[in-house]
Length: 321
Image (tube, rainbow, N blue to C red; front, top):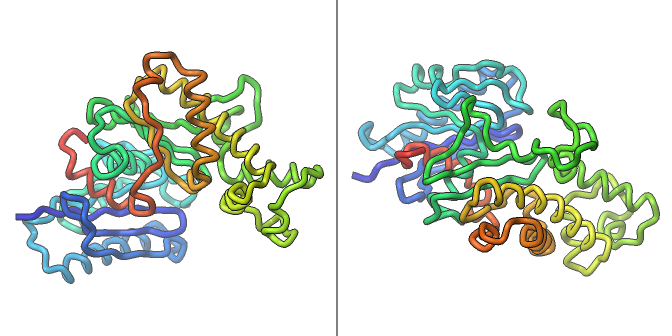
Protein backbone atom coordinates (compact mmCIF):
# COMPACT_ATOMS: atom_id res chain seq x y z
CA UNK A 1 0.00 0.00 0.00
CA UNK A 2 1.29 3.45 -0.93
CA UNK A 3 1.74 5.62 2.13
CA UNK A 4 1.03 9.34 2.27
CA UNK A 5 1.44 12.33 4.55
CA UNK A 6 -0.05 15.78 4.41
CA UNK A 7 2.50 18.59 4.49
CA UNK A 8 1.52 22.04 5.73
CA UNK A 9 3.70 25.10 5.14
CA UNK A 10 2.47 27.90 7.43
CA UNK A 11 3.83 31.18 6.08
CA UNK A 12 3.37 34.79 7.04
CA UNK A 13 1.34 35.48 3.87
CA UNK A 14 0.05 32.10 2.69
CA UNK A 15 -0.43 28.66 4.21
CA UNK A 16 -0.04 25.79 1.74
CA UNK A 17 -1.09 22.16 2.08
CA UNK A 18 -0.35 19.12 -0.05
CA UNK A 19 -0.94 15.39 -0.01
CA UNK A 20 2.39 13.71 -0.74
CA UNK A 21 3.46 10.10 -1.09
CA UNK A 22 6.73 8.61 0.11
CA UNK A 23 8.35 9.19 -3.30
CA UNK A 24 7.77 12.94 -2.91
CA UNK A 25 4.97 13.11 -5.48
CA UNK A 26 2.25 15.69 -4.80
CA UNK A 27 -1.26 14.49 -5.65
CA UNK A 28 -3.42 17.30 -4.25
CA UNK A 29 -2.82 20.89 -3.15
CA UNK A 30 -4.64 23.60 -1.21
CA UNK A 31 -3.76 27.18 -0.30
CA UNK A 32 -5.01 29.61 2.33
CA UNK A 33 -4.37 33.30 2.95
CA UNK A 34 -2.73 33.38 6.38
CA UNK A 35 -3.54 37.07 6.80
CA UNK A 36 -7.26 36.51 6.09
CA UNK A 37 -7.73 35.01 9.56
CA UNK A 38 -7.85 37.39 12.50
CA UNK A 39 -6.96 34.91 15.23
CA UNK A 40 -4.83 31.85 15.72
CA UNK A 41 -7.96 29.78 16.35
CA UNK A 42 -9.52 30.83 13.04
CA UNK A 43 -6.40 29.88 11.09
CA UNK A 44 -6.08 26.52 12.86
CA UNK A 45 -9.75 25.78 12.11
CA UNK A 46 -9.19 26.64 8.45
CA UNK A 47 -6.17 24.31 8.27
CA UNK A 48 -8.19 21.51 9.88
CA UNK A 49 -11.01 22.02 7.37
CA UNK A 50 -8.61 21.90 4.42
CA UNK A 51 -6.90 18.76 5.70
CA UNK A 52 -10.27 17.04 6.11
CA UNK A 53 -11.33 18.21 2.64
CA UNK A 54 -8.18 16.73 1.09
CA UNK A 55 -8.82 13.40 2.80
CA UNK A 56 -12.47 13.35 1.75
CA UNK A 57 -11.74 14.22 -1.89
CA UNK A 58 -9.06 11.56 -2.24
CA UNK A 59 -10.99 8.84 -0.38
CA UNK A 60 -7.75 7.92 1.33
CA UNK A 61 -7.78 4.94 3.66
CA UNK A 62 -6.96 5.92 7.27
CA UNK A 63 -4.22 3.30 7.24
CA UNK A 64 -2.56 4.97 4.24
CA UNK A 65 -2.08 8.31 6.03
CA UNK A 66 1.05 8.46 8.16
CA UNK A 67 0.18 11.85 9.59
CA UNK A 68 0.22 15.60 9.13
CA UNK A 69 3.54 17.47 9.22
CA UNK A 70 3.62 21.22 9.61
CA UNK A 71 6.48 23.68 9.19
CA UNK A 72 6.22 27.07 10.88
CA UNK A 73 8.39 30.23 10.64
CA UNK A 74 9.53 30.35 14.23
CA UNK A 75 11.07 28.51 17.17
CA UNK A 76 9.54 25.13 17.98
CA UNK A 77 9.93 22.50 20.69
CA UNK A 78 9.91 19.54 18.31
CA UNK A 79 9.31 16.87 20.96
CA UNK A 80 6.19 18.58 22.33
CA UNK A 81 5.06 20.22 19.11
CA UNK A 82 5.02 23.54 20.92
CA UNK A 83 5.37 26.76 18.90
CA UNK A 84 7.24 29.28 21.04
CA UNK A 85 6.57 32.22 18.75
CA UNK A 86 6.12 33.11 15.07
CA UNK A 87 8.05 36.21 14.04
CA UNK A 88 5.61 37.48 11.40
CA UNK A 89 2.33 35.94 12.61
CA UNK A 90 0.95 37.45 15.85
CA UNK A 91 -0.85 35.53 18.57
CA UNK A 92 1.11 32.29 18.52
CA UNK A 93 3.16 32.53 21.71
CA UNK A 94 3.57 29.14 23.42
CA UNK A 95 1.00 27.37 21.23
CA UNK A 96 0.71 23.56 21.69
CA UNK A 97 0.00 23.11 17.99
CA UNK A 98 0.65 19.37 17.87
CA UNK A 99 -1.87 18.70 20.63
CA UNK A 100 -4.49 21.03 19.15
CA UNK A 101 -4.30 19.47 15.68
CA UNK A 102 -4.16 15.87 16.90
CA UNK A 103 -7.29 16.44 18.98
CA UNK A 104 -9.14 17.86 15.99
CA UNK A 105 -7.84 15.56 13.25
CA UNK A 106 -7.37 12.28 15.15
CA UNK A 107 -4.12 11.57 13.28
CA UNK A 108 -0.43 11.91 14.27
CA UNK A 109 0.98 15.43 13.86
CA UNK A 110 4.60 16.63 13.83
CA UNK A 111 5.58 20.31 14.04
CA UNK A 112 8.98 21.77 13.17
CA UNK A 113 10.71 24.95 12.08
CA UNK A 114 10.16 25.80 8.40
CA UNK A 115 13.84 25.74 7.47
CA UNK A 116 14.28 22.37 9.17
CA UNK A 117 11.52 20.91 7.02
CA UNK A 118 12.98 22.55 3.90
CA UNK A 119 16.31 20.90 4.83
CA UNK A 120 14.63 17.53 5.22
CA UNK A 121 12.83 17.90 1.89
CA UNK A 122 15.97 18.90 0.00
CA UNK A 123 17.93 16.07 1.63
CA UNK A 124 15.41 13.40 0.69
CA UNK A 125 14.08 14.65 -2.65
CA UNK A 126 16.12 17.67 -3.79
CA UNK A 127 19.68 18.96 -4.11
CA UNK A 128 20.79 17.05 -1.03
CA UNK A 129 19.59 13.63 -2.13
CA UNK A 130 22.18 11.01 -1.24
CA UNK A 131 24.05 13.19 1.26
CA UNK A 132 24.08 12.47 5.00
CA UNK A 133 25.83 15.65 6.15
CA UNK A 134 24.63 18.96 4.82
CA UNK A 135 23.55 22.48 5.69
CA UNK A 136 20.62 24.32 4.08
CA UNK A 137 20.17 28.05 4.27
CA UNK A 138 17.34 30.25 3.05
CA UNK A 139 18.00 33.78 1.89
CA UNK A 140 14.90 35.92 2.04
CA UNK A 141 13.46 38.52 4.40
CA UNK A 142 15.39 36.62 7.03
CA UNK A 143 18.22 34.13 6.81
CA UNK A 144 17.48 30.69 8.23
CA UNK A 145 19.39 27.45 8.41
CA UNK A 146 18.96 23.73 8.87
CA UNK A 147 21.62 21.14 9.70
CA UNK A 148 21.67 17.47 8.79
CA UNK A 149 24.27 15.28 10.55
CA UNK A 150 24.57 11.59 9.68
CA UNK A 151 21.15 11.67 8.03
CA UNK A 152 19.45 13.23 11.04
CA UNK A 153 18.25 16.78 11.58
CA UNK A 154 20.31 18.46 14.26
CA UNK A 155 18.00 20.67 16.32
CA UNK A 156 20.16 21.49 19.36
CA UNK A 157 19.40 21.15 23.05
CA UNK A 158 16.56 23.70 22.90
CA UNK A 159 15.61 22.94 19.27
CA UNK A 160 17.10 26.31 18.24
CA UNK A 161 20.01 25.16 16.08
CA UNK A 162 20.52 26.49 12.57
CA UNK A 163 20.09 30.24 13.11
CA UNK A 164 22.72 31.05 10.49
CA UNK A 165 21.31 34.52 9.96
CA UNK A 166 22.18 35.50 13.51
CA UNK A 167 25.78 34.39 13.40
CA UNK A 168 27.83 37.58 13.87
CA UNK A 169 29.47 38.73 10.66
CA UNK A 170 31.17 41.72 12.29
CA UNK A 171 32.54 42.32 15.77
CA UNK A 172 30.90 45.73 15.70
CA UNK A 173 28.05 46.21 13.29
CA UNK A 174 24.51 47.27 12.54
CA UNK A 175 21.75 46.43 15.00
CA UNK A 176 19.58 43.43 14.14
CA UNK A 177 15.93 42.67 14.90
CA UNK A 178 17.05 39.77 17.08
CA UNK A 179 18.51 42.24 19.59
CA UNK A 180 22.10 41.62 18.59
CA UNK A 181 24.28 43.46 16.12
CA UNK A 182 26.54 42.63 13.22
CA UNK A 183 24.43 39.57 12.30
CA UNK A 184 24.66 38.11 8.79
CA UNK A 185 20.93 38.69 8.24
CA UNK A 186 21.43 42.42 8.80
CA UNK A 187 23.68 42.52 5.74
CA UNK A 188 22.09 40.00 3.33
CA UNK A 189 18.37 39.90 4.20
CA UNK A 190 16.37 41.14 1.22
CA UNK A 191 15.08 44.26 2.97
CA UNK A 192 18.59 45.33 3.87
CA UNK A 193 19.91 44.50 0.40
CA UNK A 194 17.33 46.80 -1.13
CA UNK A 195 18.06 49.56 1.39
CA UNK A 196 21.76 49.37 0.63
CA UNK A 197 21.39 49.48 -3.15
CA UNK A 198 18.99 52.43 -2.89
CA UNK A 199 21.60 54.25 -0.84
CA UNK A 200 24.22 53.67 -3.51
CA UNK A 201 21.90 54.97 -6.23
CA UNK A 202 20.98 58.06 -4.22
CA UNK A 203 24.70 58.61 -3.73
CA UNK A 204 25.09 58.96 -7.48
CA UNK A 205 26.27 55.51 -8.56
CA UNK A 206 25.42 55.01 -12.26
CA UNK A 207 23.19 51.99 -12.84
CA UNK A 208 20.60 50.46 -15.16
CA UNK A 209 18.40 49.74 -12.15
CA UNK A 210 16.76 53.18 -12.31
CA UNK A 211 15.58 52.50 -15.83
CA UNK A 212 14.12 49.11 -14.87
CA UNK A 213 11.92 50.76 -12.22
CA UNK A 214 11.22 53.96 -14.18
CA UNK A 215 13.04 56.00 -11.56
CA UNK A 216 10.88 54.74 -8.68
CA UNK A 217 13.45 53.50 -6.16
CA UNK A 218 10.67 52.13 -3.94
CA UNK A 219 10.02 49.52 -6.67
CA UNK A 220 13.51 48.00 -6.35
CA UNK A 221 13.57 44.34 -5.30
CA UNK A 222 16.31 41.68 -5.31
CA UNK A 223 14.76 40.42 -8.56
CA UNK A 224 15.26 43.84 -10.17
CA UNK A 225 18.89 43.91 -9.07
CA UNK A 226 19.35 40.45 -10.59
CA UNK A 227 17.82 41.55 -13.89
CA UNK A 228 20.20 44.49 -14.00
CA UNK A 229 23.15 42.20 -13.31
CA UNK A 230 22.14 39.92 -16.18
CA UNK A 231 22.12 42.98 -18.44
CA UNK A 232 25.74 43.68 -17.47
CA UNK A 233 25.05 46.49 -14.99
CA UNK A 234 28.33 47.01 -13.14
CA UNK A 235 26.78 48.28 -9.89
CA UNK A 236 24.51 45.23 -9.65
CA UNK A 237 27.27 42.75 -10.50
CA UNK A 238 29.61 44.30 -7.93
CA UNK A 239 26.83 44.39 -5.37
CA UNK A 240 26.02 40.68 -5.72
CA UNK A 241 29.74 40.01 -5.46
CA UNK A 242 29.78 41.86 -2.13
CA UNK A 243 26.69 40.05 -0.84
CA UNK A 244 28.25 36.73 -1.89
CA UNK A 245 31.42 37.53 0.03
CA UNK A 246 29.43 38.20 3.19
CA UNK A 247 27.56 34.92 2.87
CA UNK A 248 30.75 33.09 1.88
CA UNK A 249 32.63 34.25 4.97
CA UNK A 250 29.91 32.80 7.18
CA UNK A 251 29.73 29.59 5.18
CA UNK A 252 33.51 29.18 5.37
CA UNK A 253 33.14 29.08 9.14
CA UNK A 254 30.36 26.50 8.82
CA UNK A 255 32.51 24.39 6.51
CA UNK A 256 35.34 24.45 9.03
CA UNK A 257 33.00 23.66 11.94
CA UNK A 258 30.73 20.99 10.48
CA UNK A 259 32.59 19.61 7.43
CA UNK A 260 29.38 19.13 5.39
CA UNK A 261 29.19 17.33 2.05
CA UNK A 262 26.84 19.96 0.65
CA UNK A 263 25.57 23.42 1.39
CA UNK A 264 22.19 24.05 -0.23
CA UNK A 265 20.98 27.60 -0.68
CA UNK A 266 17.36 28.57 -1.35
CA UNK A 267 15.00 31.49 -0.87
CA UNK A 268 14.23 34.57 -2.93
CA UNK A 269 17.70 36.13 -2.76
CA UNK A 270 19.21 32.88 -4.09
CA UNK A 271 17.39 33.60 -7.36
CA UNK A 272 20.18 36.10 -8.07
CA UNK A 273 21.83 33.03 -9.56
CA UNK A 274 25.38 32.71 -10.79
CA UNK A 275 26.67 36.23 -9.91
CA UNK A 276 25.84 35.48 -6.27
CA UNK A 277 26.84 31.81 -6.22
CA UNK A 278 30.14 32.46 -7.98
CA UNK A 279 31.10 34.94 -5.27
CA UNK A 280 29.97 32.60 -2.47
CA UNK A 281 31.97 29.67 -3.84
CA UNK A 282 35.05 31.81 -4.44
CA UNK A 283 34.97 33.18 -0.88
CA UNK A 284 34.50 29.75 0.68
CA UNK A 285 37.42 28.45 -1.40
CA UNK A 286 39.60 31.32 -0.19
CA UNK A 287 38.60 31.24 3.46
CA UNK A 288 37.83 27.63 4.45
CA UNK A 289 40.41 25.03 5.48
CA UNK A 290 41.91 22.98 2.60
CA UNK A 291 40.50 19.53 3.42
CA UNK A 292 36.83 20.36 4.18
CA UNK A 293 36.54 22.93 1.37
CA UNK A 294 37.53 20.29 -1.21
CA UNK A 295 34.72 18.03 -0.03
CA UNK A 296 31.86 20.52 0.07
CA UNK A 297 29.56 21.34 -2.84
CA UNK A 298 27.56 24.58 -2.76
CA UNK A 299 24.30 24.08 -4.63
CA UNK A 300 21.07 25.91 -5.34
CA UNK A 301 17.96 24.37 -3.78
CA UNK A 302 15.82 22.37 -6.22
CA UNK A 303 12.38 22.10 -4.66
CA UNK A 304 11.51 25.79 -4.92
CA UNK A 305 8.09 26.78 -3.59
CA UNK A 306 7.23 23.14 -2.88
CA UNK A 307 10.07 22.68 -0.38
CA UNK A 308 7.93 23.58 2.64
CA UNK A 309 5.07 21.16 2.03
CA UNK A 310 7.31 18.35 0.80
CA UNK A 311 9.66 18.75 3.76
CA UNK A 312 6.79 18.91 6.25
CA UNK A 313 5.37 15.66 4.90
CA UNK A 314 8.88 14.15 4.95
CA UNK A 315 8.89 14.44 8.74
CA UNK A 316 6.96 11.17 8.52
CA UNK A 317 9.18 9.64 5.82
CA UNK A 318 12.51 10.05 7.57
CA UNK A 319 12.93 7.56 10.43
CA UNK A 320 15.88 9.52 11.80
CA UNK A 321 14.21 12.93 11.33
